[in-house]
Length: 344
Ligand code: TYM
Image (tube, rainbow, N blue to C red; front, side, top):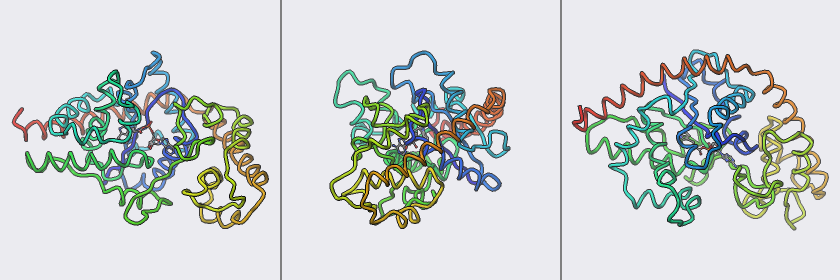
């Protein structure tokens, strides 16, 4: 069975961007593939600590699993494995091994590192090393498909490069994940445009050139999944648009309106094409926004009701089962790598 693998950090709160760009597609995908694929969904708690944490990591982990379950992930299915990264020590060990073949140059070119460190000397080394740990997360399980948002595609390329470099140097140990173009094609509804893979990226509501991010200080720029449905609707009403004056899907010239079209499609479960066909040419932005606000409000209400029904006991049972499996698979792959290098 092929493995599909993904992770989402647990900073306590999720944005609508995380949900629509990562959790929901993952949940839908897992429904489609759980009968025929191994599906690994893990909590990268070691990645989380690159930022200050408030001592509530374990609680936040439970919270994010509740979000996954509310998004439709079937915690009890035998082919769906849920685990916490810090409970599988092979991730850290392989990370070190890959560190010794990764170069300062390629790591320094990682966009997320550049954005997060802003060239500060005080930036922690974890921020720099983050993509190598991510490569270990993927290579340990020989995962083929790794559904992530567009911002993570560069890290998937790095994963392929490090896996290939290791194999060339020490012998065939790692199975490389699919190319980003193949990943995008696999994630239904995402287009591979002109050879450049393009995943879903929900934009900041006030600065739609940027992605919606939990770290943005402006409250109205992001919808948190814990916002009340009414507050979320208000944020949509105050979203930045443009002076073109006509609804069209054009991420480059009209990122605000295009973002709202994207949000409308994902929250109603319609395809982007049909939403675009329905609203294209509409000239009253206020009316259009009201439609999106209503869809978001309804989506949030349903989602929060489902979330309240998820039980902690079910989550903990899924972790125990998943971590047993993960340690077996990851330790076996780690041993192969250790033997190839001559450590064993
Ligand atoms: P994290 O927590 O930063 O992001 C989790 C997922 O959410 C996606 N995402 C978005 N998608 C659309 N629009 C947005 N505005 C938006 N913001 C975030 C991200 O692309 C991601 O898919 N490095 C990973 C975590 C990770 C991982 C892994 C993933 C660690 N190891 C191994 C897959 C495989 C990350 O960015 O988490």
